[in-house]
Length: 115
Length: 115
Image (cartoon, rainbow over all chains, first blue to last red; front, side, top):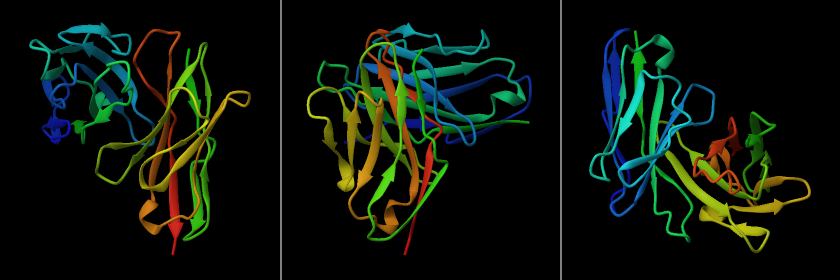
């Protein structure tokens, strides 16, 4: 079946602008996660949704970052007043969390470059 | 807090030889452990997991990993390396006691299989 998809694949924006990154999880997966991967590092957790609600947003670095999942499927990560330090690959993942499947399945990522 | 260490930035192995990619972890409770592989310009792909039960777990593409609770390790192994195994490998942990579903990743190990 279809995997996790993310759009756009690349986004270049100017410092101070607002950006939205979209994630479409695997059909039927109730849990959705956002991670950020900087060059030479492993992914770092940002936020986790179970259904429509953010169950854990402890990884969001500051209040410029916000994410929504209004219908429990597609999610949008929103970054206000972008800074050059926000440049990274933003990864989305989804999972079943049904008590049997624990692995997260990742999308190809959105490479964000802030100039 | 949970953490993962991958002590080797790079591992080189000759094709046909056995390979090991090392991972140690730190959690306050019991861990769920995962290995992912990342090919250039592609997302993370799930390889295998340890949740409970047998300490030796088998995964995709002939990879296996051994959970060692006393050494807090979860090394990735393969009996005979292929050139196509060359990629970036990430170990990840989830702390069950913490009650969160977030994964904490290591920095990654670049595996190069030499023909």
